[in-house]
Image (cartoon, rainbow, N blue to C red; front, side, top):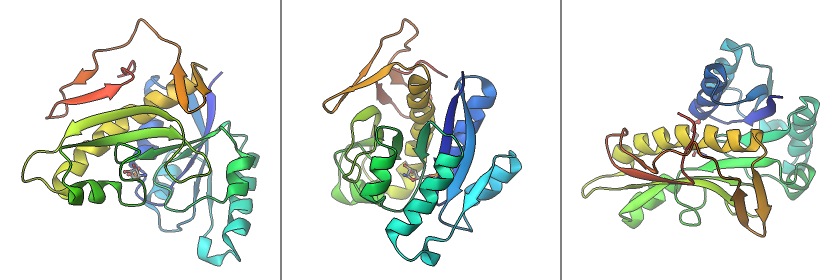
Length: 227
Ligand code: GRF
C-alpha cells in the first residue's frame, strides 16, 4: 500500500514537486495527503493546488506561541492520516512536543553534509568555510536541529573559484535524487534505526555509487536504486 506522506514547506517547493513527480512516474510508492505551510506566499502552495493536493496553511506570526502553532500544524498533519512527515524547506524549528508527537516519523533534507553546517544556511556556510566537498543529507528528525540519524547523503566537489550561487543548483539536483530514494526505502519498510545508525536492508538493484550525469562527479551513499 502506498505510503502516506504529508509535506511541510515554507518556500519554493522544488523538493515537494519532485516527490510528486516520482510518485507519478511510479518510482516512489507513496501518496501526498497534505501540503502544509507556515507561509501563505510559499510557491509550494500553488504547486499543490495545481496537483489537487490538499493544502493547510497558517501564518506562524498569527499564532500565540511556537507550541500553539505546532499544535495546530500537528492536528492538521494527524488529520491527514499521513504516516511520514516530510520536511522540505520548512524554515522553522519544531517544538519538542511536536517531535514527540510524531517520534520517528519525521524526515528532513539539509543542503550540506551533516554534521557539518547545520542550521538555516548550510550551503552558504559551506561556501564561506572553504570546504572542497559538500553535498546534502536526508535524516530522521530528533529533538536537536539537523541532528537525527542519517538515511542517505550525496557528496560533490566544490571547485576553486566557486561560490554558493554556482554550486547550489547541483546540490538541489542531488536533493532531488536522494529524497525520493530515502522515502522509497521507508515505503518498502527497509530502514531500521539502531542507536544513531540507519540500517538498510540491501537490494540487488543498487546502481553504481558514482553518478556522473550532474555535470560534475558525485558520490551517493547508500547506493541509489531508483532513477
Ligand atoms: C532545500 O535546499 C533543502 O535542503 C532545504 O531547503 C531547501 C528547500 O528547497 N531544507 P525547495 O523549497 O524544496 O526548492
